[in-house]
Length: 410
Ligand code: TMP
Ligand code: ZN
Image (tube, rainbow, N blue to C red; front, side, top):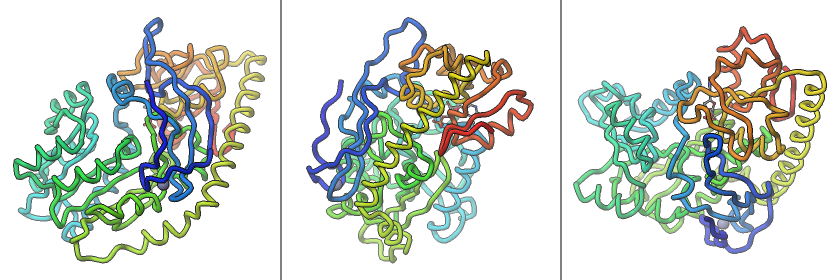
């Protein structure tokens, strides 16, 4: 089901330091109906490369097992919509210096890797200046994208598939890879594949959760089997050293608890790199990263302990507790605490794919959002959408509980 990871995927280093250990865990998006067999369990441990500071999982679960029945769909939330507008405008500023929607008759080709159900690309629907295309290996998601009118290649983005597309003469002006790069095992292969579908002015935009933001939020719940790496910029610089691409700019975003958009240019592109690249690397001393991973481990112990104590006292008081948001993060939290439905009666979530399923590794059912009214306390397991969720459910009579950075009853 998995193999041991022995060579750093950014710098090829082989010396690692243990960073965080969550024991043996279920796969975070393996939502199943009661009685249905689950995909299996695997060690969940982070190790850090002593040379480039890249934190990565100590084992790699086979992608066929992780992604054959993929239940993650891009969030339809207002928060995500706003974020899409922001990144489109940030990218557009780099394309001929004007917003994408205002480039006149020039047709900009946007290629998205890991385009999911087409939610991001459909932002361009009706915009005659943009031609979109996505790569998405999950059949169920590619079908939904097609229904929305988003042209989707139902395959994994890898070298053979990129060569095939490139051979048709296709070259993208913008290549977007949102929250997919840290799921990729073969980084060299991925960057190499970009060569075949890009030209000398192509802008590549890779968005990933940023490791330093994980430390700020104590968000150990970003650690799950799909996230093979926890990105720092020094690692990206090492990775690109022998490739046709170079770092161009780094932009911080609040999405998913703190992410970075890393822009790349081809080496033959003549402009200067933005100061944000060196500034970001300067703040990533390897000794500091190691220390912060240690602190994250301690924060995890403390927050899980505090939340379990709170749940025990609420049980004694006869209160009903639920979670809100059956995200992968929720799976990590509930398994790290070894919670059962005795502690958390249900988790509310509106995603169709998770309906009537159990949170992986637990007996806790996923129920529609409307069930929230039955709870006295609701843990914001989707804490990254807390502002929007609390606003949407402002008539909730119970109390919200924030699990991080510290456990807090609101
Ligand atoms: P994510 O952080 O991995 O996108 O997961 C967030 C989960 O929360 C996802 O399963 C959808 C769910 N959710 C709702 O059910 N209702 C909401 O209003 C929001 C914002 C999220
Ligand atoms: Zn390394």
